[in-house]
Image (cartoon, rainbow, N blue to C red):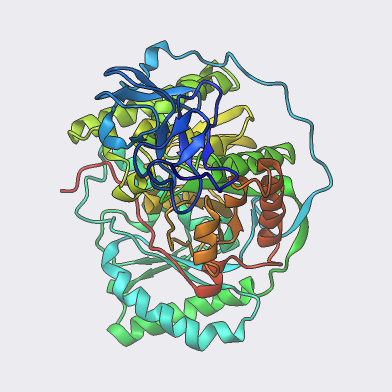
Length: 508
């Protein structure tokens, strides 16, 4: 029998749990005595579940105090429970879920916290100062990309107060059923991206001239001077000259913007996860939830998302809805997505990736229970459909697909000016329009990716820090990033993922 030389081999989240996850990086080797009455019957990798009891076929497997599945076979105490031994439970029936039954008293306000932001005429506040150029159709992307490179090299050096240029390229605008009911999703997303707070109110649209999604459809009152129609130009070089001429007009105005002291209540922060593992719901996401509560206490707006990673835990969220209307909207967004997946003949358990499973997540239920920890404990004050902008401050559920890039695009359309992104397996994801703060679930990942991970939440698992301590560290880091005092690694290296629209409407 091997001696347990580690102070802590397992983490059990809830007293009701009948499984625990392996903490140490090398896993647990067969015949290791974990506790006096618990011996490993096989090798179990880091992050994976060990059985704390003998399971019979059909027995409930409990983590986070909730049923994450049922045993497909007999599972001896001390053995490894991987995804192949777990049967997926049914999703919580939406009609039976309670709404607005567990609204906590308002949390004590946090006052005196400020950041340095860029104030806009519409009342929004940016965290970056960027020249945004929106396209009304994918056809113009090639020309815009050429122009954007020339703007970076020839114009931006003359305007040091401007952080960069962001072409809003996308695959929409022509060959689409533009009047279909669900076409409202990509259309409002493009519209809201174009008016993002980090663009400083400067609206510039590049059009081909014959697309279905004409600029006037996005903005009925747009001035002709803010539209560049390529079909009106005399050849490629004239197109580039025209784009650079208009860009410089906008750059001159953007260069006059300066950071001003703003209350943290002016921040709009998005929460997202990708490359999740079994530590996500133990370290990074709870710490993010604590930081989220602090932001809400300051009066800020915080968005969490990803429908398929909320669906199996939605019964834990609807009671936190501020009222019946908000709770019913949350249920309706879940129902819409249930139908969307059904039309595509896709089961919700298609969500966990091979990497998620390698990281110890058995199924979408376990993933969801860990994912919703990002939402903290605040009441949910509003629910948004994909790409909508919030109208209230506080904790907001913004319905989006779980895909990192689609979710990020939808959250940008909803106006986030900073994003917090948790990861266990690791991802190089980044956004040009808003800084992305990377939080690792494991210290091993932070040590491996020193120059990609901004905050290490793995020290919670090893007992070196508490959830509250890491949450407060993250809260202060968000303020520094929003103020331009620090840079996230993704911005330092210029890591920028493309805009990726969610388009549930038909393509003709």
